[in-house]
Image (tube, rainbow, N blue to C red; front, side, top):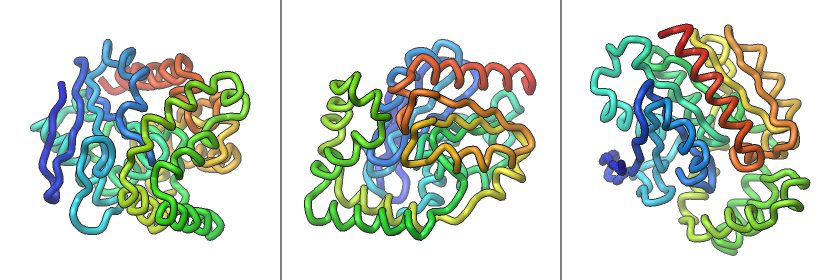
Length: 277
């Protein structure tokens, strides 16, 4: 079912599928909710999936005012309140789990920092709690300049293949090409706003250390955007960590190792449901 909410003068779209304990899937930068298609088909058999197009992505409008991880987390809260009316008083088995891919993980961390009591658990899928290094900020600044000069389509065409492992790109060039074609009509202003927001986000290692529930880390061994070494440094911080490594993936594990990614998610969600339900 396709639904929408109004938030900060923007219409934000999301889908609701399946039944059971609520799980919200947040896509990353330069994507929309379609990145989860393979994941949705399997998980919706067991869980209630809430799958938004973040403000400025897919059919969702960009919000008025400054775009930040915090403002997008507030939009996520409005979606959850719309789907779980008793959210603040919900029993543990009705509290949602947030799973964020890449930038979606940054938004998940911003949400968990402000509203930890509303979550049963959360997961970082190719994402990190660490702030951008100065080197990373410089790379993002160069990307912003490229987008402004050449447009979003050219940027997506050049940047998307680098998100996949070299092995996958060589073996499945048609899948990489399909991803490029899906997102060449992205709004340049949205991409620039996301980059600026990511550069400003703070270190949220403290969220990992202070969160009371379990946290899932899905890591790509060949991820150039969130390197394996950096990912592993954060895994010891939570009270309860689930660490899963995709041996043949870059930054797009839900496509590169689709079955294994779904299996990791399903095992995590099922186990915490048994423990806390």
